[in-house]
Image (cartoon, rainbow, N blue to C red; front, side, top):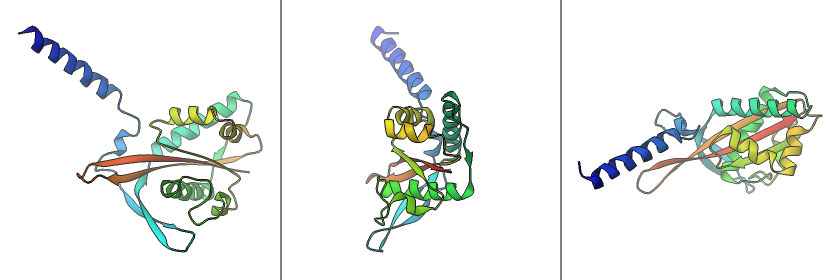
Length: 182
């Protein structure tokens, strides 16, 4: 075998190994098996817009687990999840895909989504639960929410927003919401 071809094969093999071992935790959601749905978002003017995608329950659970582990290290109690807060967190994650802000697309404060909501952390574009948790830990206001001792409940939502390029390529952007309550 010629040296140039052998070098190419070795490099190709190394790149293949790197790519297959560096697949992000959310990559499993980038398949046709993901059950994408279209959700309506209410705007300030009362009109509706839509976002399409799906929620990633596995990563949501990982973030809750990482959060409670972190709180325990910081001397705070672990947080319980609730259905009411989960519903609010799901709505906020989808709304964040449309407008990334603590102000909702309808112009109201994030807390208007539920009487149970008392604190909120948002993020987008991260690939793993650990990555988003590290980002929140490194942001003083987000870290304060995660360590706040009066919070008793939490809900985490990860919404994978589907986008389709002109050539038909499908991609997802991940929007994460931590919703805190008393």
